[in-house]
Length: 83
Image (cartoon, rainbow, N blue to C red; front, side, top):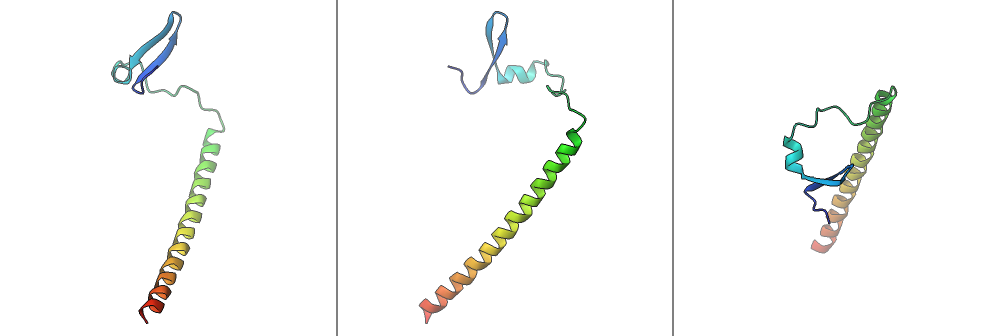
C-alpha cells in the first residue's frame, strides 16, 4: 500500500518510492511541462476561460435572484406571523 505522501516511479528494476519532500527538493524538476503545448492551446485556453466567466455570471445571477426571493418570502412570513 502506498501512503498519500509517497510517489511511485516506475524504473527498470521495479518500483522506486521517494517521498514528496525528497522529490520537491531533489532538483530533478526543471519547471518545463511534461507535455508540450500544441498550436491551438491558446485558442482552447481562451475558450475555456470564456466558458468559465459565462458560468460565473449565470451562477451569480441565480444566487442573487434566489437570495432576493428568500428575503421576500422571509419578510412575508414574518409579517403574517407578527400580525
